[in-house]
Length: 157
Image (cartoon, rainbow, N blue to C red; front, side, top):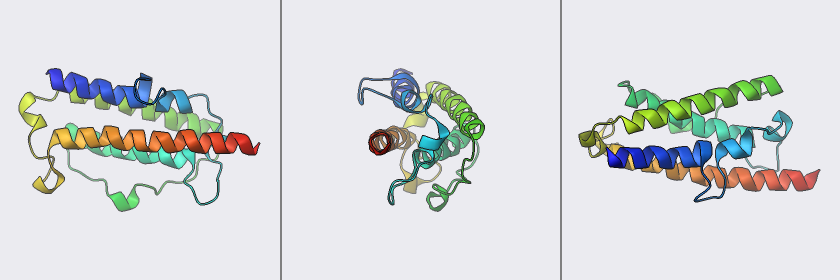
């Protein structure tokens, strides 16, 4: 179970509480962010809220598989979200994001050893460990975008 704990902790680092790789994490960047900044548009870039929802979309989709369900998410829908129009909607989204992320990490911790090298849903997707590593890397990629967009918007004020 050592690999599972390491994966779960690496996932928690990028989403919930780490500073080792990027000196920040999603929760640190988003928790006290006003919804107006989260939804502010800059040129043709995605908004901070859309990027956060995008990562949450994949967390929920993979979480469903870890719970024994099917892979029901599709890349073509991974940026399609209704607009957030209030601080309450943004705060509710964040509450769900943190809750799903912690549940996701706990599911990783509890994966049997043999599952890590097993095919993830279908052979074409690679193994569980490849997909979990990919989720972590994907999250860091978009975390970097969020940090940059936030800095751009702050200088526009």
